Image (cartoon, one colour):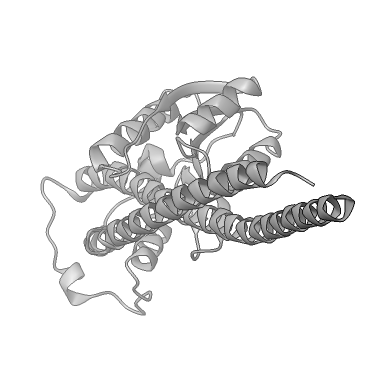
Length: 293
């Protein structure tokens, strides 16, 4: 059995650990709430973009836009969204497991230090790595989206996909791979935007949408809107990934705090037993000395 002094040192260490993990849990909970609010703040933008595209859908020839042209996929382009820091449970490892299952040729643009380290360690093709702050400013994410779109238009990659931990709830974050380019159709884009805005698909065209006028022409407006749609999708998924990260870290820190509390109880019991044994031993020694005398 360890000495009471050693047990006291362990108790002090566990108390310090519990205090740190509790603080990290509270910080992660606060950041998760802010990330969720930021994700919901994009709904009006998605709604307005859906209305404009719905008004354009019947006035343009979709096949004319490079984002809507299907082509043979030789090399996939994947945006991998991970965290910069650890202590987030299995969040990043679940993403990496999905990456290892990709057998087709692929090139990666990575957001997050953990993802960059993994791609380098596994000798995969890294196009670029980016750092995005906790605020997830649109200007920061726009750089990533535009970089991958350029690679797509230049023929370096034949798809643009994004792999991120989708936020389901506080306890569940699902690794998800979504294809951004090429787009299947304008109608599908409209449906995705309305789903993100929390709207059901309308059964008929809105009269306001039918009366919209576009200058200089619908084709030019569509060519300007589709890149904005891709930028918006990447931004929305990175916001979602941040909410997942803070949620996973909050759960991991709560688990660590609970384990520290349980360990503290066990150590306290062990300390009391050791102290009681030491007192009993001292009493026996005193009694033996008196009996000898």
